[in-house]
Image (cartoon, rainbow, N blue to C red; front, side, top):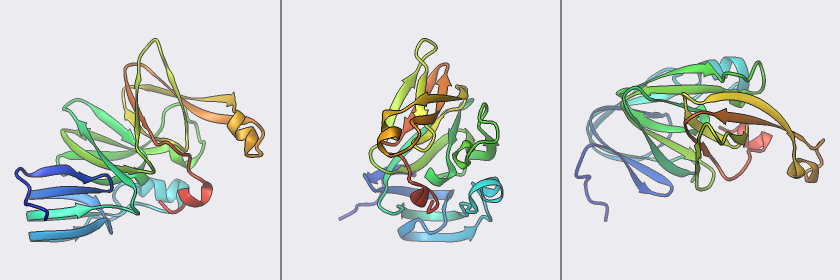
Length: 215
């Protein structure tokens, strides 16, 4: 039996599902709510996160909905793993729109091109969240959280990166990849290099072109 939440806000229900105890308003990906109870009303929020992403890159956006009232709602997406990033005042978190599940209404967002990426591929148009609150995210597998320090830059595959703290400096880096050669490629892969002080979240698998188009 699932007991009512003790406090309002976003919590992890299990590895594949987040619970939001609504006391006012929150935002979520349309189609991601799997259950709810209480006195809640729902409103479409237009294109939302991914508006520029839709027009400029992938042909797909991420429509949002507003959930208002008093009650509880549960969110999930294609049995992907769920986790929460807490954004403090003055902080910003950059994330690929396809990884967004739900978030506090106290968070603001905008679409930006990743610095240093030029006009390269679609995963390099990201949503930047700011304000104060919790951001519910999804990814394939258990996410890896890798610290980044000025002495130790981190290189991540552009298809595997989920998000990072925004004050990190980013640039594209080309390198030889044994994995790429084993898959029949040229052996060269493009990676995102992150430098500075913060952390990056990576999923433990690369997206295939077909799978990336589904999100």
